[in-house]
Structure formats: C-alpha cells, structure tokens
Image (tube, rainbow, N blue to C red):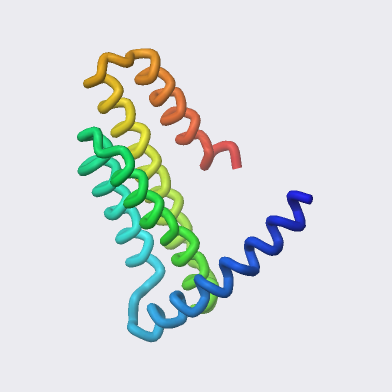
Length: 135
C-alpha cells in the first residue's frame, strides 16, 4: 500500500514541480541558486521566526522553502544531470537547514525552561547530521 501511495504522490508532485523547474531554467536560474535560496529561506523561518517563538509562522516558512529541495534536483536532471559540486552543495545546505531548524527549536525551548526538550532537539540535530554519512 505504501509503495502505491508513494508512486501516485510522486506523479502528482512531478506535475507541479516540473513546470516550475522548466520556467526557472528558461529564466536562467541555476539549480545551485535554488539550493542556496531555499536554505536562506529555511534560515529565515527557523532563526527569524521559530527561535523567537513564532512556531506556526516559522514552520510554514520552513516548509515552503524546504520544498525547493524537490525543485533543485528536478532542475539539475532537466538541465543534463547533476554535478559533483551541485550534489555537495545540496547535501551541505540540507545539513545547514536541518541544523538551523533544530537549533532554533532548542534555543526556544531553552528560553521556556524546557531542558528535556532542548536535549531532544539536540539529539535530533546530531542524528540528522549523520544522514550524509549513513548513506
């Protein structure tokens, strides 16, 4: 059942993402620029909003900009394939974004005196950093 859902969800996302990717490529935007812009947006959402306690706004901004991760990969494939530099940049920016999200959560929880929550957020931050190595 999960595999069927995954295939149909991927097909639906492709219908949304590919036209946007195509338009950005036509406009001269590179996949690497989308990667960096997405990371900057996540940083704004996490550090500018989430760390200050505006959790819903922060989560919405982070989610919106995290979706650019689908876009940059699609753009790379459409423009002839990914490069080693692009793959390195993408994975590095993903770790920066993850760190900002969990760091912002840890910071906000610390300001609220929720130290067990801080510990949980830091465990998630450390575990998330291992993703690149586990692959």
